Structures are given as structure tokens and as C-alpha cells.
Image 1 (tube, rainbow, N blue to C red):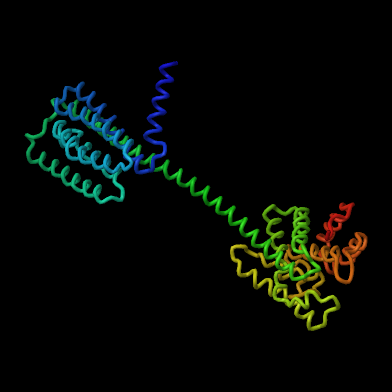
Image 2 (image 1 turned 135 degrees about the vertical axis):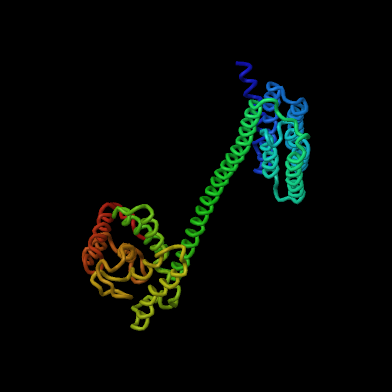
Length: 403
């Protein structure tokens, strides 16, 4: 158990130093170096078993030691560009060419070592001119090594048996597969992590936008209500009553929220109506009533400038339509009137009856119920007004009125 715990502690330390808190480029460099270390160690063991050239064995061991040096430099250095350049220079110009010339050259597995050097070089390149120059020189140098070995076969130490060639090729293929697999897995992991971070950021942004949008609508509603000294809080109450009706109709939470927002801004068109008309204590003249009738269209035009909130202007335009078709501004009838507007129309009328005016106090609950019942099928949608009547009957203490 003690040995197992020590192994776990060692693994944790290695993980923290190599992976945790590193950006993608640092991860790629560290993993490329680790693979080179592992590859060099495995290759050294196989070369000893196959009795390969002592120079090849020494090159493999040197790769391990050099990899450890680069890894240490990468971990400790603030700017790991130095580790990347050192690794590419020594690997591409010394170690991998030595392995190539001492392990069969083109006829062994070592051409794959040359490719491996280029792959690792490409992996550790970032937007840095020095690394691109090193990579280009390494590519040219390795191509030169292959051409030189082709025309000067005496420079290559070949294997003594075909079996050794086969083992070396398989070993090289495994190492290259390990490199590619590690790189692709790392990129995939980095992509998923980035996607999760992006999704989280989008969710936070969406939530912030919703808060800002609601705050803006709330501010607009208060601005509208402030024009009429007799209807303080009218928009908020109509929004509340509309939400209650929508819920009892069995609409989804999203639809309930949309209708509530529509109700909150249903009177926004009154911004274009003079204060003298809105606050007039006596009966309006024909001309003044004509101006009042314009506010649904004005409100719809204003809200049409908010494309991110689709259909937000429905309640503003049609909440004064009547179920029998005698309302305004378009004289819609029955279900021609959009459902949100029919809901808001009932909630708006209920709040008008249960709010104080300059010429009267709010109506008694019995009178409100009687007015709603009389408007059933003429002014109001029968199904919606029935729900409002149900809400009123349940309100035993008559809490739903202007306080």
C-alpha cells in the first residue's frame, strides 16, 4: 500500500507539473518530449536485445537524457520557447539523424524516426519565426540525410537480420502512432474544454442579457405609468394578472413569460399621447379619444424595433380589440385576435376596474365580477374571462386591486 501511495503521489506531481495550468502549446511540447523519452527508452531496450550498433543504442539513451533536460527546462522556464527550440535543434539535427544512419537507414524503420522528428517539430511550433526557421532547416537537413544515405549506402549501419528490420519497423510505427494519437487526443480534449468554456460563457451572457432586457422593460413600464398619475403600477399589475391567466390556460413557462413581457409593455404607445389627455379628469372629447385610440399602433411600431424579442408588440397593438369585433385599432373579432392580446385585454380591464381614478375609487369585488360576466362573449373571450372570474372568486380577501 505504501508503494502504491508513493506511485500515486509521484503521478500526481508529474500531472500537476506537466498538464495542470498549462496552455495548449505547453501541453503539446511537454507531451512530445515525454513521448520522445519513452520512445528512446523502449528503442534502447530493443536495440540491446537485437544487438544493434552501440552508436544507435547510445543515441537512444541520449534521447532519453536530452528529453529529461528539455522537460525540466519547459517546466521551470517562464517562456518555454527556449525548451522548444533546443528540443527541435538537437532532435532534428543530431539524435534522429544518428538513429537513421545507425539503424538500417531507408531499409529499416528509421525513416519513420525522421518523420517523427518533423511531426514533433510541427507540434511544438507556435506563431514564432524562430521555430518556423528551425523547422524549415530541420526538414531540409533530414531530406538531405535520406538522399545522402541513398547515394552513400556505406554510411548506413544496416541490420544483420531481416527479423531485426521487421522489429525495428514495427517499433517505429508504434512510436509514430503514439505521437499522432496523443496529439489528436490532446487537441480533442482541448476542443471539448474550450467548447465547455464557450458554452458556459454564452449561458452567462444570455442570462445577463435577459436581466438587462427585463430591467429595460421594467424601466419602460414605470416610465409609461408615470405619465398617468392615476395608474401607478398599472403595467406591473396587468403583467401579473396576464401571467396568472396564461398559467391557468396550461401554457408553457416560456409562453407565460412572453405574455407577461407583452403585458408589461402593452401601454408603451401612451408615450406618444399628451399628458393633458391622459390625466384629464373629465370625459374626453371626440378628438381626444381619437388620439387615445392611436396609442396601440404607436406602441406596436416602437416594439417592432426590438427584433430580438419576437412578437413583443402583439399585446400593445391588439389589447383594445373586442371579442365581438367592435374594438380598435383593426376591428378584429373572436380568435382573429391573438391569444396574448385577448389575455391582456381581460387583465387590463380588470385592473382598470380595481384601480382608483380621479372620479371614483376602485369598484367592489361584486361589481367587478358583474362587469366581467356582462362582457363575456362581447368584450372578452369567454374562456379567458371565465378563468379571470375563477381567480376573482378565489381572492376571498380581495387582495388583487390597487393598494
